[in-house]
Image 1 (tube, rainbow, N blue to C red):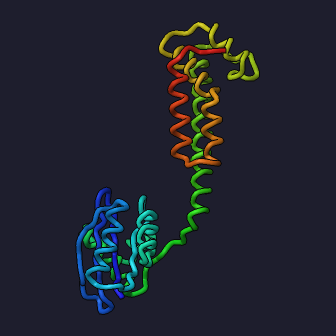
Image 2: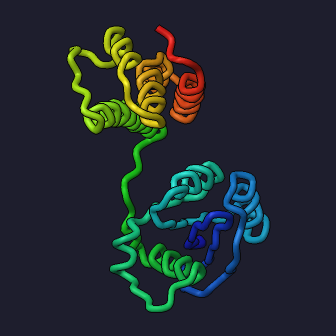
Image 3: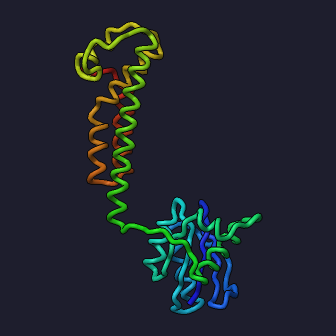
Length: 229
């Protein structure tokens, strides 16, 4: 059995392999993309045979991708709580290779402060909910900004729904200088466009990245064309 400590950066995955006695077997770095990780796992198997590898990686953005990819290659990977790792092994001089060695040593001693990871389906639902909340907050923030711009120039809101048909007609008649006027009209058009509703709804069925891209593209087009009633 080999124990592996993994430290992820933007382009590379530094690793340290230890045997059961704590001796260093191999130290190096591999590309952190999918092909690089699969090639790294195949290389370890080719050099040391079909050996069981227990690995540990600190929790950070991208750690779950490394976890999922290497586990599909037959590894056992734990994602460690980064704050607890610092508490267990504080170092004045920290480098990526030192971090990898610390994680490998914690794995060898069975001291990895592992966090619980939900399964992939649960993570999908959580991500859709987070992105939907993000879109709703952005739309609300845009509406609050429109109200603030009107108050800044002494305009009250005599209608119940400023972003409905009557409110949009009222905004077109109001007299206040550029660039505030153009910004308000574009914001109202964007916040009431179907692109926001479509983007929010798409989070339920497609990936959040596609939903946000669709929403952002539609709102950008809306802000570039005249306000249509």
